[in-house]
Length: 459
Image (cartoon, rainbow, N blue to C red; front, side, top):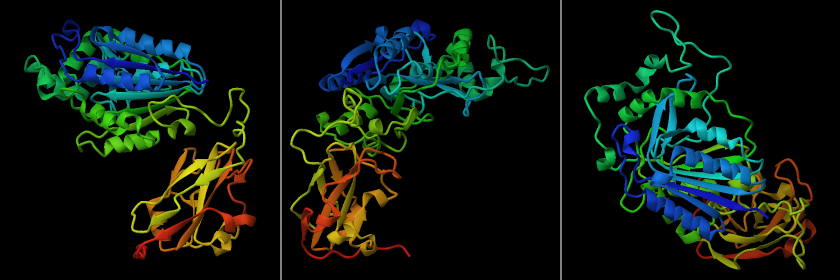
């Protein structure tokens, strides 16, 4: 049986002695960590929490490494970080922006490259969700672009290697030109007054320059193996943006909790991101970013929940239908008003197969006779380029544009077809809720209300 582990990191402040006097005071980060832990506990995760002084760089990296050691194929890992984010020069010279995104731990910055190196330590098929309510977090889990050979930046005098010992740092100062100017004007104020979760660039540059050998070594360390786990990041903002703090929660976490709605949210990972994004201001737009294996079951699962792959049983064999279940079943409303802008919702029991497609038609003969199909009498999800090729959820919602094309019919017949293959070109173990030969007995919806205007068709 799949297991779940979650790690929750919250820093309302850092060790000022490690950041040249900057304390990084915030208000909502510990509340964020507590709230995310409460969610995961309610979903059956084993949880761990690191707050303020507990959240050192070694503790964070060690906890993630321990999770990689303990979790097995099919398990789920949730990592939430709430605190300051930052950016430092990329000494390898291969980051497209010249910067490496960071988490600002209690005693030093954790580089995005360090996080990326950890993902390769997880077993194959582990699902990892990362939530980062911090500034500059859009791709904080990502890999730096490792060169095939060391590059040598050009100097007016001679070629000076970036590696080792940061001797090429002066060649990177242009990346942090504004930070260098701010530093020359004197100490930077603590940015808590403007409530943004970003370490001031001047401080980041000072700390990076002071501890160059350690940071540079971390950036140049190659990952130990290919990533066979699947990692999805939903971040508080883009790499070039800042995340807002608050008295109770960070803005991103506040909206996340609203969408989660005590566990009532039932959509997929991308839908979770889009729902949060819709509540955010234009200057702070959460990102959705993936590394590792593209896992469709994970992508389409409910967030913050232990993922259960229904394609196989505990023995690895195709799952068997429950006793008494006679193949796939789909149930919709008996009647539906055509004035509704959104299409009807159907309850689905796919049976032994994990994937299904949906078909609906005003003439049931359309199921078995493609030549009779038109845009106004038939819709098949498998033939719609705007949606995914297969579905796995317990409910299916007819897209609004399909409903707009069909709603002037007096009756709509529907069915599902199930398969054990996710590949659109294959239909292994295909089964339908209603056979072509019995199409007239398919369940149907009576469509009521005044006739709607036909949908506009582009010309």
